[in-house]
Every structure is written in C-alpha cells, then in structure tokens.
Image (tube, rainbow, N blue to C red; front, side):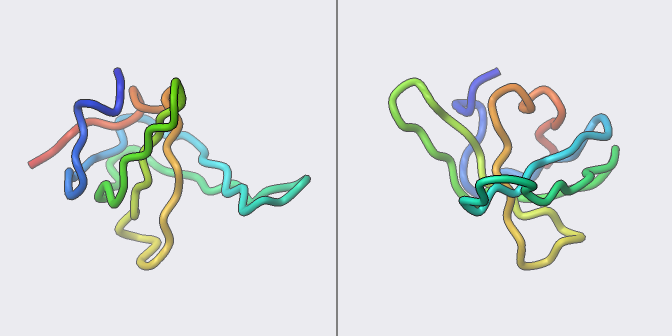
Length: 81
C-alpha cells in the first residue's frame, strides 16, 4: 500500500502490535515506541520525496507526539471513519 490512500486528517487503527523508531537524528539507540493492536491515531502529514514516502501519525495515547510510519509499516494500520 502507498501513502496515496491516506490524507491529512485520516483516522487509522493498528491491526497488529508493532514498533516505531523515533530517530530524531540520533546516531545510535533511537527510542522505540510500541504500538498495540486497536490503538488509534490521525495522519498529520503525508511526506513524499522522490521514491521515498511516509506518514506522520499522532497516536491518541501519546497526545502531542507524532511518529513516522514507513511504507513497510502501512499494512500495520487500517483506515477508520
């Protein structure tokens, strides 16, 4: 799946447990965040740079934190209304 299926404001729900790495330009040991099945969030940005694309999602339980969802993780979420 590509990020074309998502727009800013799209609500998503995790369909499996998975981890997202918070890079923050850290050279090593970036923080890992566990996302659990059933957690919900909202797409805040959709980024495309050449062949690279990703979504930035604000997960509801993390309040003010947004995390990048890479293309190989798109199948870990589904669009909800």
